[in-house]
Amino acid sequence: MTNEQIINQFTQFKPTTVTQIRALGIDAVDLGSGSTRHAYKLNQDLIVKFPIYWPTDVWQSDCEIAVIERINREPKLADLRRHTPEVYYQDRVNGVIIMKYYPVEMWDSRSPETLRRHNELRRKFERIGVTDLWFGNVREHNGELIAVDLGCFFEPVPENY
Image (cartoon, rainbow, N blue to C red):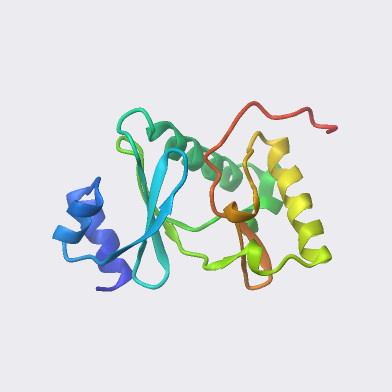
């Protein structure tokens, strides 16, 4: 099944569990869980995130989409766009998101230069209220760092931080 077909299946049937995904004939490989969401790899380059407990854990997906939309909308945040994941599908009511899968974790490259770049990126996101960008939530893709989990969002720190 192609990525386009998978996204069409989600758009049409709005699955909210891995059992429902598999019933649609979509292979889903368990990538693990965070504090509020499960993640599954679809095909070679898609990831789907589901809330662990519905409806209480929907907030993290909603925050993540809100942050990505804000970054894509506000000109002053344009420098962060290349560090945000591509989103292909969102169901804000159920907290389901499909994004591009970025396989190369920060753990794989911890050179002083990569650590410096990671700290710089983390500070940029903290200025707009995004927290929790530890190494497991940042990936490398084509020489860029990508923040793959932007769901922990709090009030931004002052501009001169």
